[in-house]
Amino acid sequence: MSTYYTIKSQAEGLYKEKGSKFLAFAFPVSSEDQIKQIQDDLRKRYYDARHHCFAWMLGMDEKRWRANDDGEPAHSAGDPILGQIKSSELTNVLVVVIRYFGGIKLGVGGLINAYKIATEAALSKAERQAIYETKQVIMKFAYEAMSLVERLITDFEIDVVKRDFQLSCEIQGDIKKDLIKTFEEKTIDLYTIEFIIEE
Image (cartoon, rainbow, N blue to C red):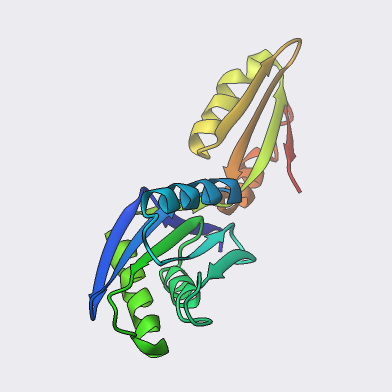
């Protein structure tokens, strides 16, 4: 699969149980530095909360993730949050659930349920956005082939990142992995253009 989903913008959810309040915040993220910055901001804003539990997922292969219970019993907070991110089939997402303790203990089962529901409440309000796995393509050509190259860029939704027009022309961009086979078939006879597709 080379199409993945994230969320378009920040979303919030709330769950209350036996006096405890669980405030859930979901954010679209693209790096661990960004995640740390968001967490630092939330800790300053909600400095009086007892727990700032979280989970995040980055990238396309589910290899970059973290879940943290922040003082709650082991696996009672971070894992349920991460579980909701996975079951929503999202990536490049951070969810932080901030708990204000209400004086009555919920037990491990109650905590798992509370963190799961709070996360679900935030993610259900978030608008999903597709992100596509891409490869880099470089096209080298003479100026006369410009209109043909521009048509390829439009037809294959190539996201141009660099244009270089010196003695010859070179355009560098990102193409969706799903379109590469068709792109190669369409361009096999275009000898006036040199194509380099990232391995």
